[in-house]
Image (tube, helix red, strand yellow):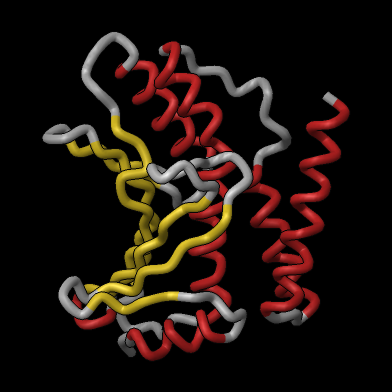
Amino acid sequence: MATTYDTIRGFLDGPGCSYQFDEEQQVLVTGFKTEHYVNQDGEKGLPVIIKLEENGEFLKVFSPAIYHVESGQRQLGVFLALLHICWRTKMLQYEYDPADGEVRAMIEFPLEDAELTERQFMRIVFSLVELVDRYDPIIRRAMATGEVDFHELAPDLGEQLASLFRTMAESGGGIDELRRMIEESRAGQARTREKN
């Protein structure tokens, strides 16, 4: 069963997310506040594009042009950081366009004949935003110095998110429960950073 933009709009309307539908590109455009990541306008926020392909059987959720990597000595360090992040996380992948140096973050999800659930969708969106934000300092350091250093990170967020979703499934909680658990996770990360 294919997913539609109306279904996804319903998922976004539930928690009160603001979004726009781009008729020309046939995508939903939204965004989320971040703690670390600063966008091209100098604001702490990550743009998120939601795109259905293959008649609603394939879902892409991505953040375009989050970085621009110029060729040079530091390029290798940035690519190593991006690959290391992909290795450390679930679902998240980074894409690089050699024509203009654009780096985008992407989660792709094949639905085929399955119906997309609200829980699946929210996990994809929140994972994209949380992981890009969490690893932004690593990438920025690699862009500035060519060095790749993961020592300052708190425990792996991918594992924390997976644990949160397992807990949510076991408790039967919905979106409000998910929000509460994410806020608790953020507070725990802040305490971990303060101790270090």
